[in-house]
Structures are given as structure tokens and as C-alpha cells.
Length: 273
Length: 354
Image (cartoon, rainbow over all chains, first blue to last red; front, top):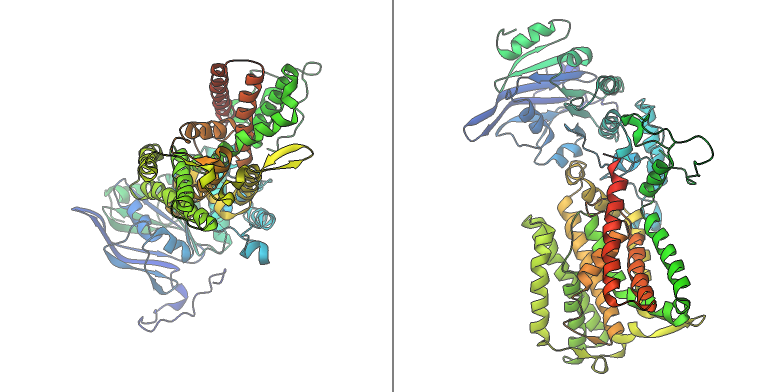
């Protein structure tokens, strides 16, 4: 696992080498189809996420945004279609599978444990144990190391408002809680961070903090997929915008190439590009 | 928010600025003495039961000189040993936002198995204890499987298994007790006393204390303990963090079953018998101890040690009121009031957080 994502040397025998090796996507979805009975959630969706970018996914309700994200994170299994991570074909049956491959997701709402402190939340489900007898036999956690690492991680991400990592989450503001959730996703050498409506529950100032954090993740070399309803935020932070419409990818635009109005037009079907 | 101790008296200096505190910062407010106390109680959940216990001991000691008699203190510890042990198991389950109404029934079943196999079936005493332990584990596993596989509420599951386990106990024992003389010494040895500075302490009390030390250690120092808190705190976020919620829940019920079997051993020593009718009050008494000990019925908050304090508070109240010459009815009344006060306090501590 290399943190900087220098993934370009991987060659798979059953896969023809890409025509543009330097633009190989970190995460790629090919022709994903997902149906629920007669309802078509995804109707052959492609998605490419490249190194060092923030890719926003927008779309009307029912356009298939959530289904797409669920397929990328292992919460749903697509009927057909392929997922490729750093040039390798991957299949996720559970969210843990995606996590195992370094795809971390911050879910809508605040998926943190309120009564536990910041460090415990960052390390929840992957606690570090002490070295030697204390750790292997008595299974004691190395609380001091986890706290020190948590502090370091928060500093790296520039979350300066959280000084004391022993504070319980319930004593934090909504923005700070979301920052902890994002920090947890970004820590531990993750390859891709997916944020599902991370600012939906937040005020203006707190949303700003989270957007700053998203930029910082990108600058740290972690590509980000951002699902959002909030157009100004999307245009503020995204490098490219994937527009989902009626279970398909309607277009991929950039904030430079299109205006917000044009994006909405594509989203609603008033325009096709 | 590091709550500093010493909520000093505000009477002389600047008065607390009531009403001028804006909502966003209210819960972090350290300027009002009440806020400080609340922060402190929130950070140290065992603090309020600790204060209650100390106060109760002082008050009952003043009321009745006999309270501090060595023999009386020894008696209190013995009376607390069984409920205190059951309260450990109950704490684990309540921390996961569950409740176990079958703790007494599991304990009775395990105690009858221990006594019967050793007396009627002539199984060697150590093996009989192990068989009883396994029965406890299995009974816990049944509860855990029903909670995790059938997704039934723990209240319903354990209400059912309470009756099932009691019925099985009665069927197995033909409704008869096994008296102490028929049971090998090892199994009744938990009732034997040794003396520390004249205070008689039973081995059962020592076993209970060791269990508290072990489980307090497990809950605070191991990942499993932290996962138990996380599951009780918010099941969904625990799942999203990659914790296998069902596995944690199942392991909690199994661990509780094992602890209950050890409680059964202590109970045999205490009563010098194994009786199918022993566990009727123990279900509610164990819940009482946990709740008074500051563990939240909503899960995720509380400590193992708090439950020992809770069990001691109940024991001290019952003993002290009896020594003061009050009818047993008043003991029950006092325990009832204690429960309501404890839960109200828990609500008050939590209210400012949400």
C-alpha cells in the first residue's frame, strides 16, 4: 500500500494496457447496472476518478446518485458492470470489502459515536494494541499511541479547532463532528474518500470548514468523490462534476466549462450538454 | 472540554450569569456552578453513586452505632456478593442498550446443574463447576442468538427465556433444592470466610471483586470493551466503522452467561444450597444496582465499578434501614425512590448534551 498512490506500474495480464497510462483512473466504474425489481436504479453508468481531484456527483432525486455511491462503497452489489481500482478489477460484497481496498466513506448524517472521545472514534474498529505480552495476550490497547496519532492526523489535515483528542464527540459542534468523520476516512492510508452530503446538516461556517478539509485531502493526494445537492459548494470545490440523470451519466463538466445554470439544465434534462 | 474539579462556591464572587448564556455554548458552560457539577458528573459517571454511598454510610453510621460493627460490615458484603456479580453481567448488557431479565433464571439453572451433577450424578466437583459454567455460557448464547439472529428486542427475548430457564430449572430439579451437606465442599466453599483484621470476608466476595477488576480492565483497556460501548452508543455508526455489531452483541450475552454461572457458584456458598426459587428478586435487583450505579439504560454510558457502588448502595440502605428499626417495606420504598432519583439524575446529566 503506497500512500502517494503511484499506482501506474500495475499491469494485469487479462487487461490490455491503457492507451493513456498516465491518466489511468484511481477508481473507475464501467457500465454499472442496478435494478430493484422493475425499477432501474443505474442504467449503465460509467465513472472515473483521477488522482488529486475532487469529483462532484450531482443529480436530481432519483437520478441514481445514492445507488451509484452505494455500489462504489460495497453497500450495494451492482447487477452487472465492473469496478476497477488502480487498474485492478475489484468486487465489493460488503462495505468492509471497500474499506479493505482503501475506499473510505463518510455517510450522510454524523456517523460517529457520541459518547466516545475523538481518538477512540478515529480508531474505532481498528484499535492499535500494545506491543508484546500486554497486547497479544492481554489485548490491551495502546491508548497513548492512538491519541498521539490522532492528534498528528488532525494536525496534518489542519483541523486546528480540535486540540484535545480526549474530548467526547457529543461536546463538539456539528462541523467539528463532521471533521472527525472526514479525518477518520482520510487517515490510515486510504486511497479514495467518498463524502455523501457531508454538509447537509451543517451551517454556513461549518460547511466552509468541511470544504476546506476536502481541498486539503485533495492536496494531500487523496482523490475525493463528493455527493452534494448544494450547487454553490460543488462549484466552489469540485475539479470535475459528474451529472447523473435518469440512472445514467448525463455529462461530465468542469466549473470552468459550464455555469451553475447550465449544470442545472443538464441535471433536469432541459439541456444535454 | 476538560471539566476541572472543585466547583467552588459562587456565593461570594461574581454570580453566575443566568439567562445570558447562548444556546450553542451552554453545554460547555463552566461558569455556573451547576454546569460545572453537571460536566463533572458527566465525565465521571461513577462519581454520583460514590457520593451517595459515602453519604449513606455516614448517615446510617450516625443513626445506628451497630452499623459500623465488624460483623455488620461483613454481613453487608456477603449480602451484596451475589447481586454484585449478577450486576456485572447486567452492566455489559445494559451498556449495549439492552436489558436482561433472565439473569436470575440463568444463575439458578447453573447453580442447580453444579449442585445436581456433583451430588446426584457424582461428577467430580471441579468438573461440575465447569459443566455449570458451560450451561451459563449456552444460556447466554441462546439470548444472544435470539437478539442478533431473530432481531428481537432484548426485553422480549429475556422475558421469554426467563420463563424458559426457570421452567427448565424446575423440571431438572423436580422442584427440589439440593442442600449443602449433599454438595462437595469445593462448590460450597464460596461461603467460607477468612478474617482480615477481624472482618470476616467470604471467598464469594473475593471472587466478585476479582470479577470486577477483570471486567473493568476489559471494558476500559481492550478494543472489545470499547466496541461494546460503541455498539450501545450508536449501533449504526459502529457498523459503519467496521465493527461487527452482531458478533459484539453475541459475545456480550455469552460473557454475561459465564459471569452468571460464577454468580451461581457464589450463590450456592451463600445459601449453602442450590434452590430453584433463589433467583426471583435477583433480576430486578441487578438492574437496580446497574441503574443506581450510573449506567444509562439507553446504552453506551456507564462503568463497571459504578454497578458495584450501586449494589453496595442498595445493600447499605437495606441494612441501615433495618438497623434503624424500620419495617422491610421502607427498605423497598427507599430503593424505589433511589432508582427514580438515579434515572432522573442520568437524564439531567445527558439533557444538556443533545
